[in-house]
Image (cartoon, rainbow, N blue to C red):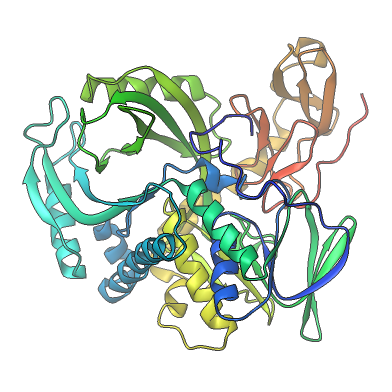
Length: 501
């Protein structure tokens, strides 16, 4: 992906090299976002040797595209989670996510990490033309869960003086890559090894040993934790319980003190979220996100950014110039909790996926959970997040999300988006039909053509071009590919099939 977030000027582990040859450790951690690095940290601190490996640069994936809210309450509404999972499970969810925020606070303090961590109030507010009873139902649900909450009227946005609001104390925010740079440094000091630019081609298990293979080497380990945003160890089953969504974020300058430092999000669908990030001198940045949609079902980023900016400027009249815009991907699970724990298909392979828009807290909480399970502990969160669970009360969500795959395969009988390659302009990508074949075609700025199969190498879903990020997106399970056909986001491991011009 080509956009640049406000966090990406931090290189978490610039000295990490590619894996060449064979090496061994107690636990191989595949994926170097917050879930992977946090897992390595927890393991190292408890005496286990760990190797972290990533297909790209360390912490260069989806974690670098977050808005970095640290909010332990279900952001799909607590009342909805109670409906799907019940009150006791929702209480456990809140406790686990709050424990993750506490753990981040503890680690950055213990390791002396300068990452702008601070505790903040969070405000859920009534969206435009949205009924007030959403806030009332949410208040009842949050109180039942036992989380601290205060009902208010109004917040410091234009035209919101009479909106119904819930205030959640002791939420938090930080700079995620500054934090991970400090955590990765602590991991190295405790014996962990990092390998970058080493795409994993296979994860196998035999006679109690897990082997992680790359092009020019392999890792042999007692255990593996697959923390690749969307798992590469499970081919299909776990992916039917998640759905990829594209989300958009913009950053604007603002004079320090012009807006209270807090987290803000509304009840609109799709919802919007706002937070501040310290900037240079007397300037801060306002991060504004939202306008989510199912991945690969729209290619209108400019329109969505336009809506985001219009929404933000209508509420915050003192916004300055735009400084950054980027997009990321979240994996929504059918029951709002991630899939973390032992992979049902293996004995010594563990997974961490399904962030449901709360990837930072899921990542840290998942590191705590998987580390405990690897060490043989009976963990109170294990059933809530068990990868093999069948969430029966979420059947409606399961059916709704999995219609995407049916629609995707049906696209193979549809015409191409353009009639011939001659119509393809420089800097553009489109699907072209050639007989029975569908081709993902991109023409670069010099006029060169890049032709690949339009079939995702994961399970064959029909790809779509993402013109903002200049990549091919899969609507079914969240795989992404460069215009050259190389996978840049899991679950796909292999490249797209090559097509002759």
